[in-house]
Image 1 (cartoon, rainbow, N blue to C red):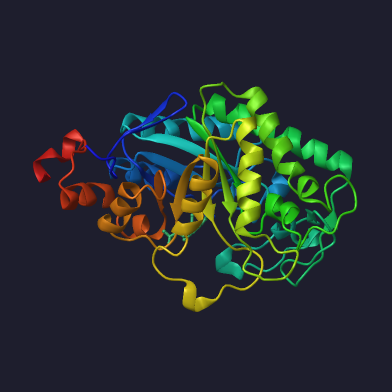
Image 2 (image 1 turned 90 degrees about the vertical axis):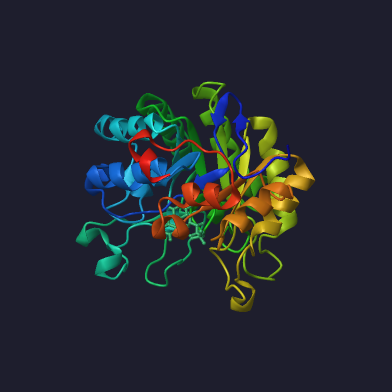
Length: 355
Ligand SMILES: Cc1cc2nc3c(=O)[nH]c(=O)nc-3n(C[C@H](O)[C@H](O)[C@H](O)COP(=O)(O)O)c2cc1C
């Protein structure tokens, strides 16, 4: 039988029952970086709904890696303990769960979205943000460039957070390296104006990400999959903007260091051509990265129907289909998709009378 949306996938030794992934979505409801009842229900209900893999929202590796004071974190033991029941509940539903680790860099220190998402200066409980260079990413404040010792410390912070992810019981880790956050601030020439070994050439601009991948791989079990979410392109034609060919080169550079899956998103810097933002518009990024490097890919963005998702897998354009907003509208999308596609999928026992 041809591989389809409900075909299992094995990544290292992690077995996913299908190709549907809950895409990471920040909830901004975690004071002190702690998850709670909201996350148990929010992530747990998508597992009940039948996704093969749940990915948590972007979770900070240090307090200053946050976007707001309400982001989830994995920089202390209390956060590990708070994640454990969420992880265990998701796994008990037959889904797997990955934590998305990130650092917001120069896009950090903002008020809660409901309070306007403006920059919070240190006097108001925020912090001076650090980035690749002295840049103003929110047009409200300017970040300071990270020093080399600070970069080394950051790489170590990611490795320690990865160890905490293992302690919490996560099945996999995704690094958020897109959407204009710290790793993207380094690899995009639009923002990285450094002249040291972390700036200038392509190899220098990807160095932070490569070093972080290596540091994480060195401390997590060899059986644990590592995913990386990229912005496959900057929405810009400027000479220093990141292009799809760069994403292929980056993927090829990451593969030998143990990255198993690249999730191809886009944007963060530059302005998208709104006319081009339509259903499936990001699928060609995953397709070209997969074809050019042979890596497993995930695609994401404006995928809303079972048929769209199934066709992506059947046609071999990507190996995983990430859904974000459609799963907010309908946590049971996978069960509905299985019925629409006449595919077999396990239904939670307490819900069997409805199916
Ligand atoms: C509420 C919300 C929060 C998001 N937070 C994150 C995040 O934490 N990390 C991330 O990589 N992408 C984040 N995204 C982007 C989504 O994962 C996804 O890439 C995007 O919404 C496009 O997919 P969709 O059309 O299925 O919604 C977020 C999107 C939404 C709607």
